[in-house]
Image (cartoon, rainbow, N blue to C red; front, side, top):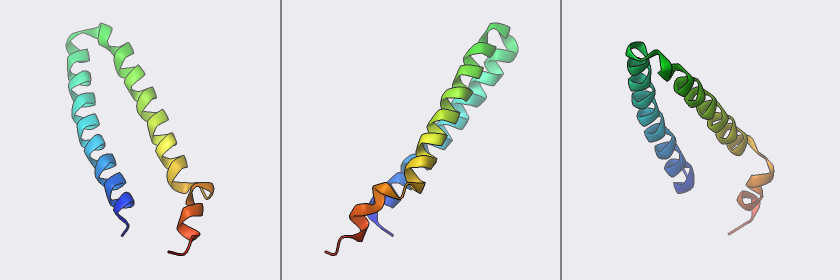
Length: 71
């Protein structure tokens, strides 16, 4: 496994852990303060956009042109 893929996996897993903890605390706080729901919705939208960007980056064939160069 290449080091850049391993680093990306570690960053994504770490981000997922932190994001899950943060989102869980936001949901628990919003149950006590109903005005927090817009913040939760915004956080979900930002998370979705980040997921789509990562997915597009990982599946892009244009960005893999350096992998085809012989070393």
